[in-house]
Length: 150
Image 1: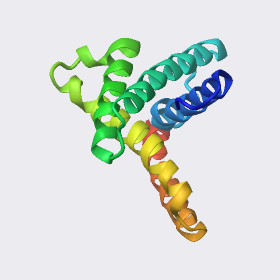
Image 2 (image 1 turned 45 degrees about the vertical axis):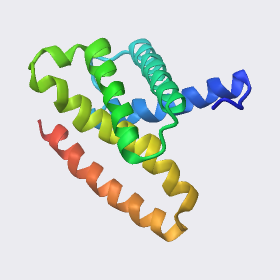
Image 3 (image 1 turned 180 degrees about the vertical axis):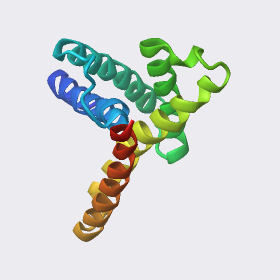
Image 4 (image 1 turned 120 degrees about the vertical axis):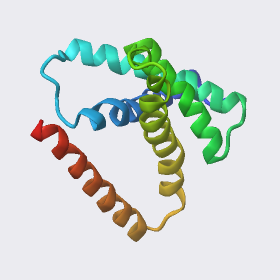
């Protein structure tokens, strides 16, 4: 990230923030929430971009290269999202410290979104990408059924 122009960094942060926003919010809820306005969604997206930027700084500064390093950076991401933006960390103390921050944000948003997905797209063959996409789509369809039936 250090060899980019300022506008390339901004686009990179917005793109990574969009991916993390989708995996953290849209993927979790699996539907448009009726209590969300477009302005609120835009503000939430920008806050996710800021938290993602903070996480990218950690990943860059400490030269994180492996899954467990990304998971640790994802833990910080999850605690920032759930502790600062949402405040859910404090509701079910002490379980709230680890449940959503580590089980959802660190694992899905950062490890899958910022670690595994770029590596898959760079190195895998087209057929493997298609099969992983189908598998991810099935998992998402099963997950979404839980919310739709509620």
